[in-house]
Each structure stands twice: as structure tokens, then as C-alpha cells.
Length: 156
Image (cartoon, rainbow, N blue to C red; front, side, top):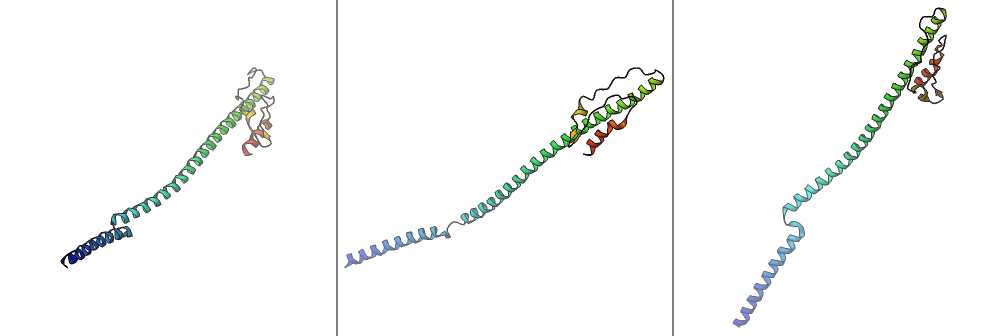
């Protein structure tokens, strides 16, 4: 009988140990384990939100850079057009002055032959819509109608 009791006691001890080991393992796998996991999960969610916000910000900044480059190109184009218009205006004004000197030379030779100043082809490049600026050159007597296409181009 003693042998039987000893065998039952050993079996009961074995079963108790087995239940203890299996119970601890299943409790840990059920999620009530390490609290650091919950902290890490919270941190991951926070980082995901930050990444999403940064992606949106990156897209906005990329668009802003493209817009800034376009604005800079537009500004550069406007500066070039302004330079060309100013050069043409200066050349046409010189033509008018020299036409005036030509009239004076008809009455009493004073100034001599006049030479047209170089507009570097800027007047001929000024075309917008139906307006094309052409330079008449030195006209005696001077005629301000040569300025009309330039003025139209400036307001087109």
C-alpha cells in the first residue's frame, strides 16, 4: 500500500508541476505579460502619426519649392522683358532727338550726319499678342508715332 501511496503522491506532484508550468506559459501568451510591450506599442503608434505628418509636410514643402522656382523664373522673365523694353525706348528716344537735330541741320548745318544707336535687336523681339514693335529709325522731321507700338506692347 505504501508503494501505491507513493506512486499516487508522485503522480499528484507531477501533475501539479505540469499545471503550474502550463498555466504560467498560457498567462504570458494571453497578453498580461511584460508591460514594456504596451509602452512600445504606444511609441510605435506615436511614431507612425509623426511619420504621416512629416510625409504631408514634405509634400507641401516640395510644392512650395516648385512654386518658388516658377515664381523666380517668372520674375527673371519679367526682368528680361523690362530690360528689352527699356533698351528699345532709349533707342527710339535717341532716334527722335537725332531727327530734331536733322531739322536744325536743314536750316543751318550744325550737327552733321546722325548715326542710329544700337538697340541690340531688342525692339524687334518685343512681340505680344497682335502687337509687334518695329523701330522706324531716324526720321526727319521726327515723328512720335514710332513710339505707339512700344506703348501698346507695354500695356498688352
